[in-house]
Image (cartoon, rainbow, N blue to C red; front, top):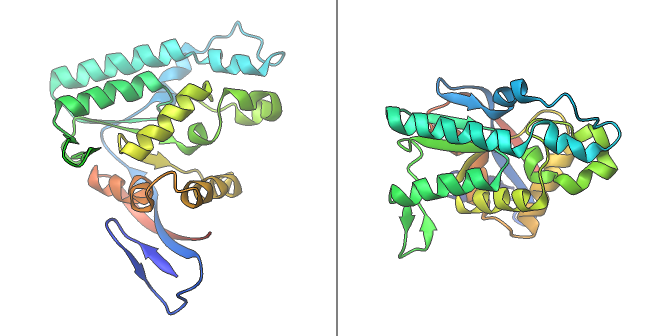
Amino acid sequence: MKQIFENKIIWVDENYFDNKFLFYLPANLSCSFEFDMAELLLPHKNENLDFKKDYKLWNQVYSPKDELKIFEEIVEKILKENKKIHIENISLLEEVQIIRNLYLDLGYFNESLNRFEIDFKNAPITIWANISNLIYSFKDYNKLKDSIFFIPPPREPKHQKALKNALNSGIISTIKIWDENKEKWLEFLKQLITEEKINLLKLWRSLYFNYENIWYNLDKTEIIIEI
């Protein structure tokens, strides 16, 4: 079995030919500078849409326009007041682009290595995505219906793709994994690993180590994934 640390992978037993990986996950997270997009969207619920007749309308019950407006206002305020914030539950490609441009302005892109090297401890704004918004998109409503009525809603595939790209580039600093639907998110993580769509160390930085880097208070749990 191999154990995943922030910058290395090491063998922790003599089973050199198995495909087991030992990871850390955070528990009991707390942070004094969080803003949760899911909570901020609640007052903007559109009560006039009959989403029980057309499940895809859930995407507009908490609309992308409202989310982006809230996000832009938060970013403007934080930068003006020279504060630090971690914005939870982003779901839009426009939000990713705003933070990407901010990180370019802050000099976090290393041109010689062609990659972002982000100072999460000192970055004024960091963002995280719910793993559900990485797994599901607008096209899943017909099949899964109200079982994916979370907030922010599953967006169009272009937004889901942007979130995955932002995760791979490091612009999304952390991913939130919930206790429920463990089988589904384990399957998703295995897929990311086996298809090599993201660097393994980068993936687990976003699942645990970046929380430490952003100054979260947290406990540590362990999980074993067999590929």
